[in-house]
Amino acid sequence: MQPLRELLTTFADCFGPPGGEAPVAQLMSQHLQSFCQLRRDGLGSVLAEKMGTQAKPRLLLAAHLDEIGFMVQGITAQGYLRLQALGGWDASLLPGQRLIIQTVTGRREGVVAALPVHFRTENTKPLKMEELLVDIGANSPQEVQALGVGLGDLAVPRAGLGVLNEQCLVNKAWDDRVGVAAMVAVLQHFRDHPHPNTIVAVGTVQEEVGSRGAAAAVELAKPDLAIVLEGPPADDLPGLSPDPPQGALGRGVQIRLYDPTIIVPQNFWRWVVELAQQRQIPHQLAVRRSGATDARAIHVAHGGLPTIVLGAPVRYAHSPASMIHLADVEALVALTVAIIAALDETRWRDLFPS
Ligand SMILES: [Zn+2]
Image 1: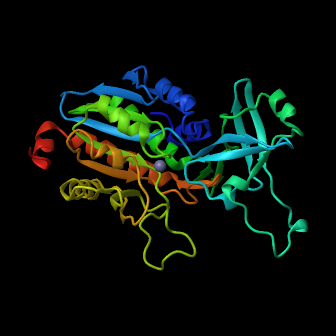
Image 2: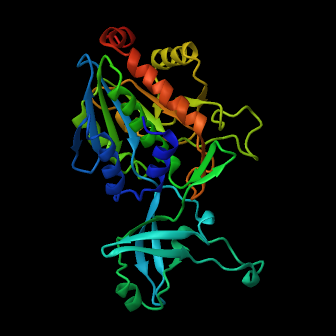
Image 3: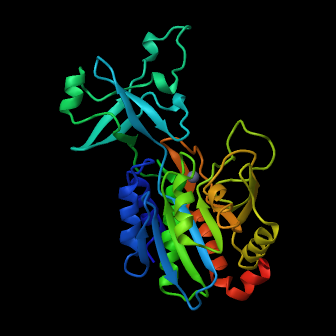
């Protein structure tokens, strides 16, 4: 198995906003092609199938390839770019950030224009998303064009790995490259160990704009049940509720029982919690009042699919400097492996009698 940290870094550094996930899809395929059967669906999601000692149940693993990003929406007379957000950005985090823009002729850099404190007055208001301008060093629409930048080009923050206190990794895109890397690590484990079922691992596209890729890919995958691997927002932050956090860094894999788009079946999550306890895998339960994952599209497909959501909490989610804890990712991989190893046909029919 590849070192987890290396796998995580390679995936986080990869460029992949919604609608432009091909580099991440390719990276996932490279890691799995030697021992999985690969397919691409019509929207660009990657399906990697691996049959174990039994064909049934078909177990879907899903992690989304896309990260929140931008599309070039307009070009001003002064040669600045306007942005369409792809996914849930907080506009106040963006002024001063550096961006990478993918054009037909290659990658360009930009910086989101910010007003220095020197020029601010008490009347200066925070900018809305549609007011942000990106400076690419051009002074006119002609110069923008000469740089190869045009409407529809995609962009993400320019980032890179930071390691804090040895165990914490800072980068863009942990939502959901932590899930994608964990999914690859799980499959690499089963390259060398038997499993009593068929795994269909799907890297989905366009989750951040409404789980469009998952809705399409699940039709091809035809699973019997599903595990969604995510990088959910950590809530061990200053200024939040004084109640104990449900997604703290370093406290293990988050088992998500509820969010406004899914109620995870009790028999499924209780069995998973029991497994985690037996194997002494650190875990934390979460009942989330907001948010959504690909589970929203998957669990209502095919007459209803038992679906659970596991994650490694991400601090500062949906920002260019998000943070994860390596031990949580290890626990996420360990619990997913334990579930797959234990889910034979008897167990499946036992848990979900038809
Ligand atoms: Zn996500």
